[in-house]
Amino acid sequence: MAERTGSVKQQLANLVKSSIQATFPGLSDVEPQVAVSAKFGDYQCNNAMGLWSRIKGSGTEFKNPNSVGQGLARNLPQSEIIESTSVAGPGFVNINLSNDWISKRIKDMLVDGIQTWAPILLVKRAVVDFSSPNIAKEMHVGNLRSTIIGDTLARMFEFSAVDVLRRNHVGDWGTQFGMLIEYLFEQFPNWEDVGNQAIGDLQEFYKASKKRFDDDASFKERAQQAVVKLQGGEVKHRAAWKKICEISRSEFDLVYKRLNVHLEEKGESFYNPYIPDTIKELTDKGLIEESEGARVIFLKGFNIPLIVVKKDGGYNYASTDLTAIKYRLQVEQAEWIIYITDVGQQQHFDMVFSAARKAGWLPQPEEKKFPRVSHVGFGLVLGSDGKRFRTRSSEVVRLVELLDEAKARSKDELIQRLEKNGTISDWTDGELEQTAEAVGYGAVKYADLKNNRLTNYVFSFDQMLKNQGNTAVYLEYAHARICSIVRRSNRDIDTLKKTGTITLSHHDERALAFHLIQFAEVVEEACNNLLPNVLCEYLYNLSEMFNQFYTNCRVIDSPEETSRLLLCEATATVTRKCFELLGINPVFKL
Image 1: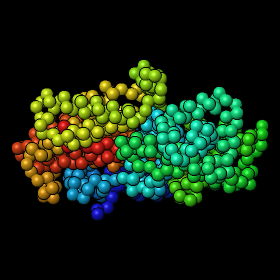
Image 2: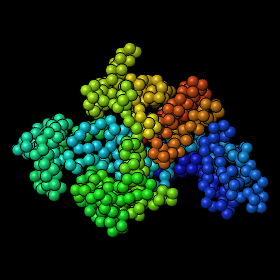
Image 3: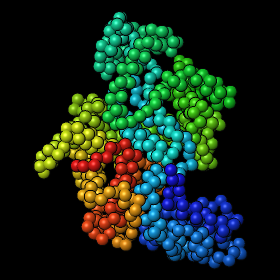
Image 4: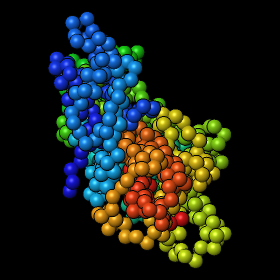
């Protein structure tokens, strides 16, 4: 297996770092600043101004930022990557890449596989905590966002050779179980014999037990005692709890199966036995104080304390989340713990993280060291009326039905189109089904991921299933079209990969190739900033650039056919990897 060399930007940053050290031996702490250049070269090094502010007035040979830039350009090590450099204005070093090197990088990827383009990240093991629905409640569109965003982040880290622990922190513990268990015992004294039938539709069962809880004081009291019995490990109550969790889990799995998402469940109940030790450690360290009957941690910068033990002696989200952080750091040895929930939980996580730092489990953020924790917040899903997304009866939307509708609509549109252009006889039922699934589910995922996650977005089947503009449908079409170009050439692409060469003489060939080799740094940026939309933007721009190339550069039967087919194949390969990272299945004909 060929080695990963890191992204192009990373390789250039290493060259710039060598130049800084050669030019200014005393300033070894300066980080190289390299960015894609909008105008004057392929990349630009922007270190000169910062370096100048540190050396001016120290009797240096450099007279201004421009001369610092000249020095940096002069001291860049010899490299096959760089064709030429120039220095502009206040010392910006413009770097042009060698066409031969770009061609070779693409050709090597085609031979050795796109894994060689995976970025090299600083983190070795990460926990990604996502999806996390509540047992006995319907999974809602908020869980959908968390599931889609979390899965994509996990996929990008996994591609980058990070050991990812995908954690489903389900709400499987707490006061609602007393109500559910007591209602089960009351309605079905022989519930063990009746099995799943006793509970039937879990949502309806939940509503009925909640109504009973709200309306009947003696039932409420029995329900509260049932919680105590469950937490005390009473066998009958534990068995009922397990049954309810099992039914709920099989409903969640219907969603995960459609989305092709894999998670390992470690819910609230998993951390419950470890909470007393956590509270003891925090008490021994003098962090916990009494306040109005509860036990709390006062934190700098927050006007309310973090309650870790409630007045009634019970534990809460904060006690569980602090215990989970400690477990993930000390037992699972995670270097980065990433939580994907809606933005409404931002303050809760800020306080939990602050308490973990106060306990000495985590470094301060300004130290920029591992281990670290991040809350990945996301906005609401809105209906076309601009309000929170609901069904007609103002109920929360059932995710399985939502996904099935996306698939059904996608299938209808596909069949209509194939009937219209007379090619439906070329398709088997299995192909229609698979394609409708890939496009339908892919459309839902992409519509979510292409937005900056912090914004609210409007859920619209009509918009997401359009075959024009920045949609999964358009991108699937673009991919299928490239595959058909390669097929129509009747050339053996695997042989061409080994024997052919890529030349970049036309402007649009060069632009496409340059965009292709930026793939690794885009994944790197999306991982470091926890922003999947960066990858979506890259993918959409890639398909636009391919269109430009294909419009202006004839591929089949042109003198440059071999080189251009290799560019087509490279574009298809990178597109497929983007799809895979976004959790979307590619289609090869449409």
